Image (tube, rainbow, N blue to C red; front, side, top):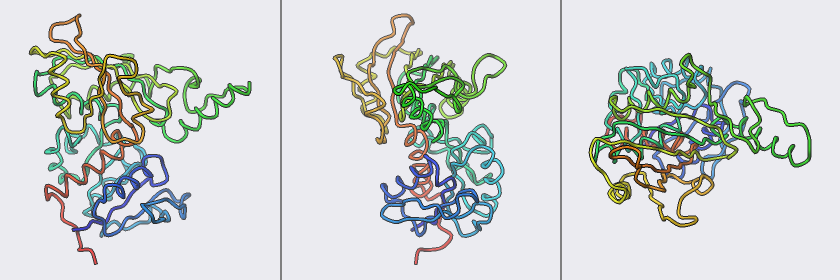
Length: 344
């Protein structure tokens, strides 16, 4: 079986990553179509050893497309995902537009692959926020073993989470600092070069940012609504890779050694944890990798049944593009979606 796949937002960071990962994982495609806004018509993007020319989303016919991987922002997803789904194409959307819709599954395959079967209500499946995706991959096996009551997480999120503009701004500001030019902040609310910004997305009435709210709401939907979670999300001057310091309180006793063994056997997780200089993973090392890395697992002495850990992942891959393609693989492997037409 081979599927016709469309990638919407193919010129963006995540769209390009989606095309790369489709080729890397040899997803069975009969055809791949690169789609973008009308201003990007003709722009060339790579798919394996081939070059694709972008076509316009607003004039494309999806009636013979099986899967649409969408990474074009919330407003585009809100408008176009239902239209595409109505043509019998399953949309896997990377934006926040559909995540909390009760008729749209929010899926991380290592955590709740079975939820993908609920796509048929709207022909839409949502990808979680990048910071949520890696967190729940690490939490799921521990929750199964000892039942998580409460999570306190502080994130250290790279500028690529804000798209190409975020990466360009860090590069431009860093260069300006070294040549003593004025530093301009356009994408971020304050200077990001050699700095930290404790704000990602807009502020809400309760004082939390929308990014922090997303982590709470999405973790509850994906993993368990009973889990209490509080987050502080911080933008850091790193190009690729999100890091998280995670404090977890469990209902049942669990030791650091038990947690290490559980996580070593967990899908999608790699444990790199030696109590010595360099015996942990940094975002630089995680960039370009598929795994969610867990390091610095230790007992939290301030609560009963508590652990602390360090969690790192490539936000463009597991946090976005890879997760979307893993969802497509779930649809294929579980025979939830048959191609509309056979490959020639």
